[in-house]
Amino acid sequence: MKKRTWFFTTRSLEDEGEGKFEEIFVNICGLDFWKYRQEPSLLSKFILESHLDEIINYIEYHKHQQLKRYQTSNDKLKIREGIDLLYALAYQILAILILETGSILPDKVKNEVLRATIWDFDKRWGFSSAYIEPRKNYLKYLRNAILNYNSGKKVLFVDSPELKILNKGKEATIIEGLEGLFDNIVRAQEVTRLDLSNCNLKSIPEEVFFFTNLRELYLSGNKLREIPSDIKVLQNLEVLDLSHNDFESFPEVVVELSSLEVLDLIKNRISEIPESILCLDNLYYLHLGGNPVDFVKLHSLLPDIYIGYPY
Image 1 (cartoon, helix red, strand yellow):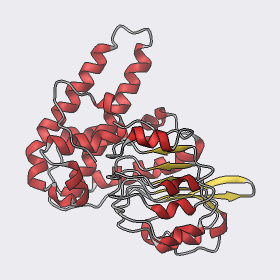
Image 2: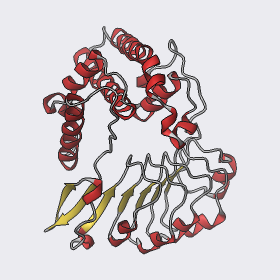
Image 3: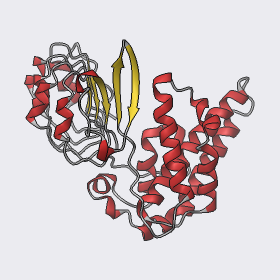
Image 4: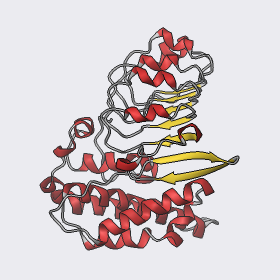
């Protein structure tokens, strides 16, 4: 999921975006991010603790640089607020790494996370109504984990899965723990969106395929290498997010998802796209950035589909 070296004086967290925070911090620790993704234990307590000061200095340096950059802007207050939110998020990502490795929790990180996991602070992101409750749950989970944290004791931080159902014509969001997610599937036909991103999955739970009316399925940030043939039952699926996983070849079974419109495979290790992808008549967005594919050849094969940037 990367092959780059991050330079303290030339790269900005703002330039890289939210999805890069973990990658940047792991790089600062001197680890190859692909290998880390396959074996998270490579980031040990000792390694992270040895680089905590460097990571914190990195965050503070770039935050200061961004504030300095916009200090004369007409929208100074609004921009400062955005920068504050962005770098508060960086501290949250660092805190999660600390929790998962059992590392020392510096007061600076603890205080920044506690400051930023209050809804009055976080709501400035401007989340749509559908995401407010999931976000509040995330904040509560992280805040409690930090408040109750004991250095040396690892805490597995798993983002709560999200179910979106249609209830009398209105969408409602349900957040459950992963263990209890599929305990009750009586209303499975009502579920239209399922988010299992960042759940440390090595395979897709077979219970997912009970939700045959899914229109959106998010599996980003796991350790998936293949897709079971059972996914063919999801014939209503329009959006499938398989980004930031461990696919070494294109999961060809997805070409049988006749309703698929958006397929995100960013940051895997896919080098070839089979011609069978042409079977996806409704596909208009195929994101393959961060894969070693021949983008010139791909544009020739799929001239009418938005493919995204190679980076």
